[in-house]
Length: 243
Image (cartoon, rainbow, N blue to C red):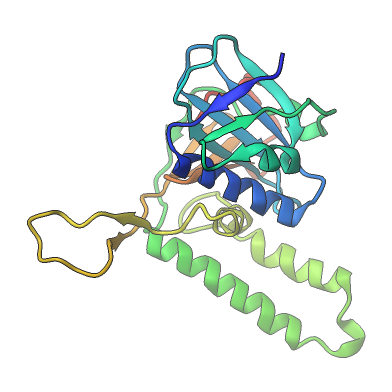
């Protein structure tokens, strides 16, 4: 039987479509793993953008809880095409053979807050500075050294650095930025304030968590999870609740 999804509003469907569109931009053959518990109110969508070495997690609130659990891997492009933003609905595509990462997801529980994360503004500034450095070093390469391997070496050096006083590699933050997870939150203006032309923009709360061998950078728009440097254990359960 074809699974029908109903999201709480068109905005929720649009946000999920935007996430899928970014994944497809990086990899036209991208796959995503879908999970939702029976009676639960959210769908969790897991994807892995190439080159970043992270798992991205986007949740979408459901208007109608599913009668049976949902856990399968589908084409990101087909799911994107199946989303109807006008009706805030989607038909789940046929499952596909999942890539290896889809079988090993971050642990379901045990996440503990990790201190040392800079402010959201500082996090975004770190990514911007790293991108600027990469471009400057790439442009400074002599023509004979402007090769893929040399550019990859520069990228590994920059994106393996850690953020603030944490173990989180900059590549995870770069992935969050590229997937639209680090954009500021737009908040409505209170009625008691003088009218203005547009909503006030507030910094998005960003938090870092750890569980076993994993780190997870969480924002209101989604999360990215990556293995902790030098850790090979701590996979935990393969089932993951929406985060």
